[in-house]
Image (cartoon, rainbow over all chains, first blue to last red; front, side, top):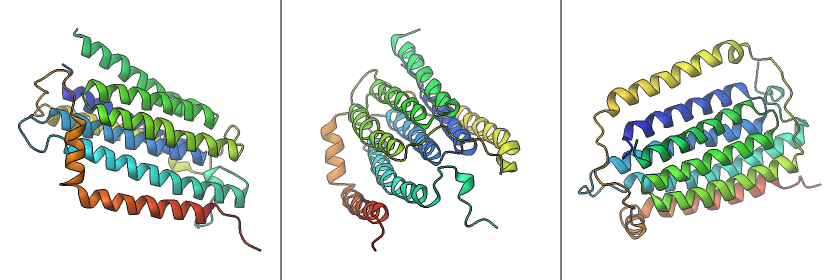
Length: 105
Length: 167
């Protein structure tokens, strides 16, 4: 059987890669995708913890339910976020986040 | 090495390669395809952990619905290769060390405190989907109903945001 730690370390690596993508990419759509990647990494550790819980405990499946809620929130976030992206792209004719600097001093 | 461990390493390598490819690809559509690879690999890992329902939802909602939405928007906006701009000095010089530090911190905490997390005692047992639905409609019924509100608000928000200005 695969030790739970392996899943947790993979989750940390994926989260870190998501952060790197978030910081270094300029395209707003790619940045949005890296957020999804980070959510996925967190989901992985939720399921790993849920699986590691002893079967006698009544809370064994709570982690998997949390994953379902995270997926629902991610779907809602994707719908609204992509709407915002379409709006900014239409207004500023650019997908580069460094050109969207209206709130910057 | 046992068979689950081999499968784990194959899927984990697939996920990490997909995530690295997401960072390195210049064109957003290639990044989106790399992200689909990551999501399918994660669905395989969920199956390996016995979370069959989560694996199915991962494929259907993430790999299907959300990524189709992304690909649609990329095509709708006709997004080309991203231009390289260096307006932010902080992201340029501080980004990589800080991200590496974060990953190292997370992994170190996981390895130190994760040792106390017990390993699953039974191999390859599937979590019954009936139990998940039972929990979802009894213990978690209020959060479940709230998510339906959330989706409703998200639909209305997306419609309001994406509609053309009148007049």
